[in-house]
Image (cartoon, rainbow, N blue to C red; front, side, top):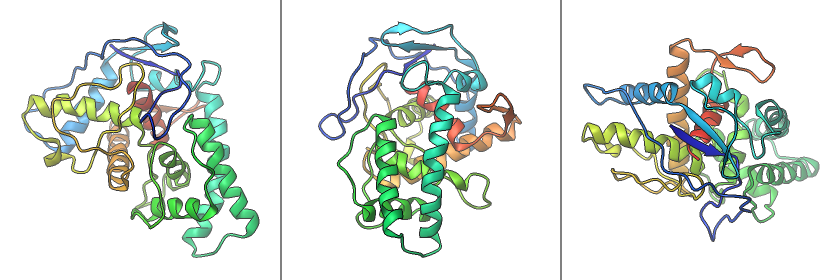
Length: 295
């Protein structure tokens, strides 16, 4: 059974400190996966999807169980909350949509090769700071040129000079490209923070170790992001590169999340929407399930 909590985390202490409101003292989750006869990237991803679908998830908040265990991708997503139970899936969807819409206008202008107006530059800085606040990862107040460099990197898949990457900027990159969902040939960036990275590397570590295959042979450049809280850090058997502050790990992680999304949609599993409807799985939906799984 996997465990997670919405308590604010301490991630990469000394670099991006955040407030700890409570830390669960939990044992690492038991991770089961489908045995695969031959290690391919697609087979490993399918096995990972199966394990998350089958394994119960007990939610925790401030060291105490919150609600009953849930099973399945859809139920895991419906039960998402951050950072408090009252800020549930629907509440977060509204807030994130507003931030993503604010960045979309700015990102589209960058993609068209246009300069921001002074008012747009101020809006970019305000949006970045609002995202840092939402994610619980305080950063120094950025300049508009730094925000632009991050968005340009996220849009092109190439790290540009002066574009930082850490637990705060990965969220800016992700929300600034969310509008690319469904655009042919384009993939939004995923939030590659300690929780998402932990969920994927931990489960894939089990799968690859059972077949005695090194991660670099199947998932090159996918790296770890160290964090504390809940079941993190988790012990890994295989060697995974450090992915913190690395754009190559950001891009590789986002591609991996896209492949998980595509596997879910290949199976025609519906993704619950914040308004109560259902639709195809998105990068954001997959990312929220992994965020919970990686606590």
